[in-house]
Length: 437
Image 1 (cartoon, rainbow, N blue to C red):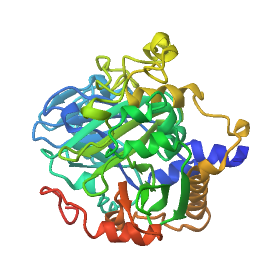
Image 2: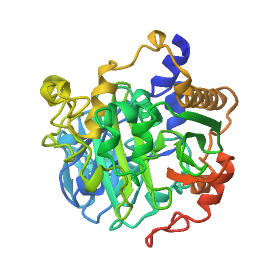
Image 3: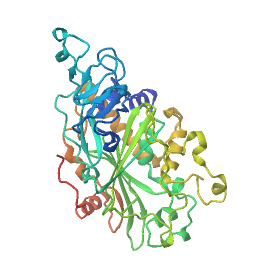
Image 4: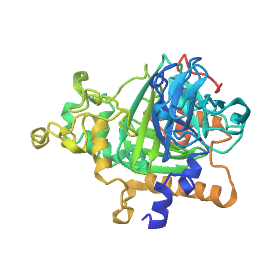
């Protein structure tokens, strides 16, 4: 069981917290590049409990900084995006994308002290159609992570953003809990509905898999396994990668290029940012290629607003009970009665409360990946706090290159040997780059 001190350290991400300090060592995917337009309106951005604004100047450079003007703390959200940077409307002070004060028009020239004023700004870069922010204290930011799906060209990757109103950890843990798929998502699917050649058959026939779990250089890894025909084994390889990445197993290991970030906005809101290779195959379907009941279409989003939590909010939410269809649930058409797999996950993780009370949990052997990941996070965060030990992957971004998730049916007994062997034969996207820029 996770005790109260551990729970607090794992879930709190604001400035000065144990986990917040760990998160600030990494580059964070913060927004889609398309959300800020050159010369356009500033964007309110909540990251790790800090209220920030993002803007793109007239040259195309993106700035991310504290929303408070360093003069009198008026919000720069109301600023004018002019040539040279963002101008505060209170007294006209202007700041460039690096936070430098470039103009103090309310002062006579002899009293101008712009060179001494700097807005709190963070380092920014763009990759794969996403704005990334480094919120750490290093003068020189660490290298960007070499996660396969984030190295795709913008034209080859699909980016999905969805906000959840709960703590980042409980949202992430839904991705590393593999046995729930056979219940929450396909609990109403009967074996006779599935094509015998589709790997979904194994999850429907055997809803209680066995597990292997281990620590890795990048975080943790599990493999759920079930017997298959001809003395083979159906394997589901998946990972947690520091600090908040998940790599889920639903899909063919050979071309499953995917990465899922659970970026804490604050302690009770998290932004999911998903990267998926557009050409990856899809394997979870019923006979004849019919979709799993309730799995489509993609969830509809509310129109974005300008408030701190106004971006990428689903129409299905707690206020409308996620549009649950009790008739479909009663008739076993959709096990949950909730449409779309992502919304089924969202309903469950948000139902736990803003921050789940871990003292009420009764963890089972099927939760091995969750308990090991919590321990891995805690140990890394405490080592950073107490001894200054840099957490995994910060300075070795190429470690992520060893990560690939997905399903496979193999005649193998050693799961780690099988994983390493499969990794040597995977399909690499044409747009994949061998190293970060």
